[in-house]
Length: 278
Image 1 (cartoon, rainbow, N blue to C red):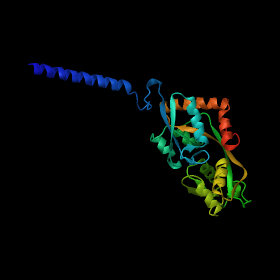
Image 2 (tube, helix red, strand yellow):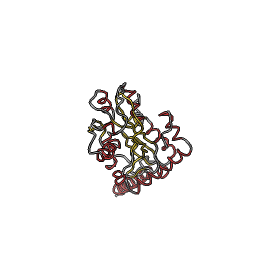
Image 3 (spheres, rainbow, N blue to C red):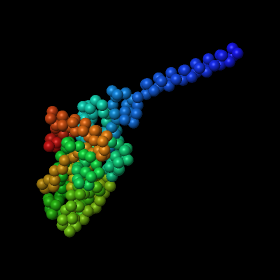
Image 4 (cartoon, one colour):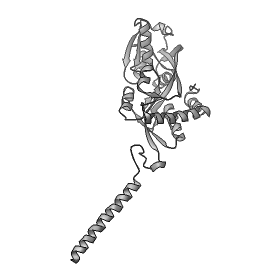
């Protein structure tokens, strides 16, 4: 009988111990998909940001293999101003950025994205722009015959597929009986610039800052030419829906503060020598 009683007591103590331990675990583990930091109600929500990581000087890896650049610094400044949000970056190729966000690999894109009707149907954009891209013609430095879009008629140009620059060429061709031959490239501008110098292409269009930076870094004999083709604002991009909309509002509030107190202008001047935020 004593053995039976002892066994019953031991079993009861074991069950009680399990309940206590389970209670401790449930009270200390506050992590959840909406709160990956595990800091409870006062913790931070993690936001994953998609970016190319090869688009110098906007987003690229430095000598320590750390992401840096104008886009990265702007997002990090937003991070400082939002106590309940923590931003992490994921590098992805340009042609997979939107697909990655659609499949929820990340929550936001920071990669010099411009608005158009097709994109606005599918995605949500920050109300505030954070950069204004000056679109310029890029040609060989010994070419003085191409200074306007009209000068490209009968010529061959290269451009990265799906970009706002490709859309400018496509719109011109739609209005001018396909007067320009367009060759499409995957990835960033480097291959396009190299093919212009080699004589395989006559020209391209791209952001003046990007073009100048790459021409300098690659040591290419190219130049920007003529008057700006367009001035296009850049925005942060989000999925549509109630939760992404809350994130967008927070980002816009921070951007509004950064424009008002001059921080955004300071970051632009640091990277480009002038203010491209208007």
